[in-house]
Image (cartoon, rainbow, N blue to C red; front, side, top):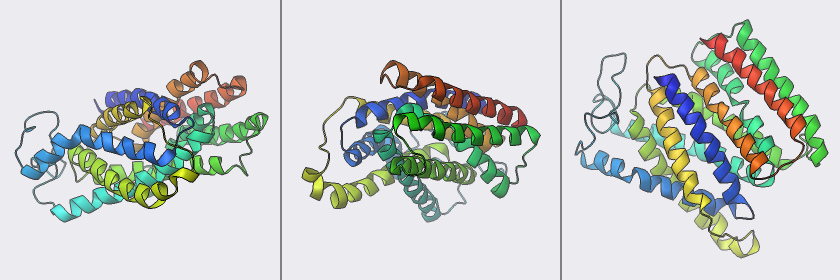
Length: 315
């Protein structure tokens, strides 16, 4: 079941990336991200209220946290009865900072780069997660996994060469560095998710994580964007903005529930989720009419072949 949820999450992530690209066109980045966190928080506000009031409205449904290997069932608020409330919230707050760091860098990169370049770069995230899983969770790489890692590295090298046709230099372009930073922070977030999902319930993490993100983005926009808004790219409303929140909320719901399964592997879940690049790449071709597709398709194919090797090596 956890693997099926990972595939569902991947599909929704592809539409999430496409919605971001559409919303960011000639638009200010920070208010778009702020509205994303606002709408996501509104989506999960019933669960936040239920957690605060302890009403147990969603008890006995699929929204309940799982029973973990130690045999301690989670209570209605989303974390085990033996788990201190303060620690639970601090864990989620740290996750909010990690993810926002990734999102802010990724949003700026996506605004200024073709989605057919950003998507494949993001698709290499499982390689970083795999190495992290090996270091932190004791997962070991076999020859099949190493083959996938090397193919992903090769694809990035080829991508850096093919992108020069669009005057994008991987070694000097600041937006490439933004996407790379977002990918690294995203991989760190994936590893951290596997850690906290051993202790916290999926709905508790997702609902409170969105609320803390909203608080952080409110401060960032108030201090950094609003005072200088007239001197930067103006903000305009786009109906793609609420779609961002809808797609990421449902994608993360499937993702967190996949990770909450004790037998799930973060390396495999992260790998499957990067399959979203197929949808975002197709949308880059069909909707955004991006160029240099033949070379990018070869780079993407290498990444996907690498994913296949990692997948079978991780089974």
